[in-house]
View (cartoon, rainbow, N blue to C red):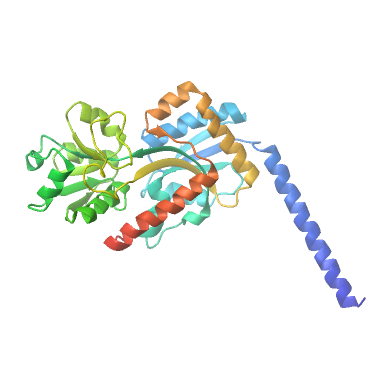
Length: 329
């Protein structure tokens, strides 16, 4: 054997030993997980649906994992600040992102200079999913004659109609543009700083319509808002007389939003599984499930199924974004 061959074999052997040592170290860390407090970063303000969901899960996970689970709010820029922090965190399972579908399937496609990309995250679990509700304000004279979705679309063909959303690229925005395309109408988008502000704008008659979350149900039942259709494939149990968009005459419009948890990419599979098992067991906690159900339909999915959903929605909304040329500098 030549000296060069011997050197190459020795280098390969050392590399194999180093790789083996690294793998053992990673396995050991995964087996010991969790050994310290875990953070759930919420990219939105305290008190909203995501924050409530995170705090319910944090308490449940604390009990299951035997470590403190802390919730930190990092609001700003449509969830971008929180998502960026988690994308840059160590992939060790100790930093979790709690966010919504817009941050993963819309932001990366509309912001030209976004500080993260979807591929920088490992899906952990979808927790809540729900359709949106197309609503109008019956006290608004501009839409006083509107009782159905067809009425609203017909009105939009004869006079200017505006709609609100929680911000540019919000699913309420993209969903309405999907409807406009299907119905062959043009309506004017009015972006607000968050869903609560958008709902206030609708109640204040600043805009004529809006796709709202199921948190609008009490306002519909109280008569302050009128529900025309729901965006998902089935009717809402709380509003059984409100048709789906497809039932209202616009097939092909079928979308929901989700709230879920993600980790930095490259988090060890064993750590992901440990965290998912703790989250999944919330099904056995009646008190936690009651609070979660108030935020929307509890729809826990495993990491693989959650990843597949994200891929599908990325393509779905990408078509709308491209067609409508929606971009943010």
